[in-house]
Length: 248
Image 1 (tube, one colour):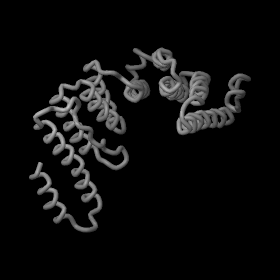
Image 2: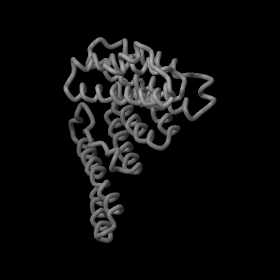
Image 3: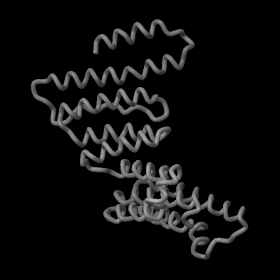
Image 4: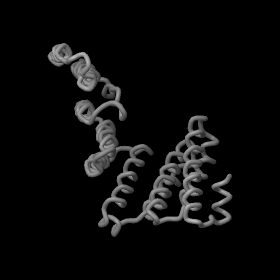
């Protein structure tokens, strides 16, 4: 670790002042070095803590894939030292989420590794799995012979029905709305399933925080606006139930 910090200082001194991209890449190494240092300190302690140390996850917007891979290796090492299968699964899931930006197959492989650990799967990881399934249906004609958007919606709906608490159920209904919207965009579903899912989410959000209410209403409004514009362009008219829901 000390050699890593020394190498950082030496590399920093060699980078030209205006080489912003190179400086950004090098700065991304500092949290990773600190995470490695914290892991080494915790692992060498006489009394091992009950859980591995937590690290700041890389940024989706600012950190490149290489930083995510390094961060994942640190997280996997920590999880295996502490024999923490949940932490190991979440490390795979986090890298899979990052790979969804550009590489669906790698994301799918990483999420499979996450599921194989039989860890608890929350709505974020479940949403990532559904995102992979949606992209597979869109990109791979062979996948359409094995599955369809209606089947995906049924799977998400079954998962949502397992949760009675509005705070726990809300993310799954938002995922359902996202999947159903993709089905509508691919001309496989009518807009009704997505409208129903977002409307249910809006009702659930009334029992949640103001931020969750705002996010949910924004998603419903954005989809309703898209449906209205598409129907106007086609010269078709929504059914009475759909029109009431869109205009509400």
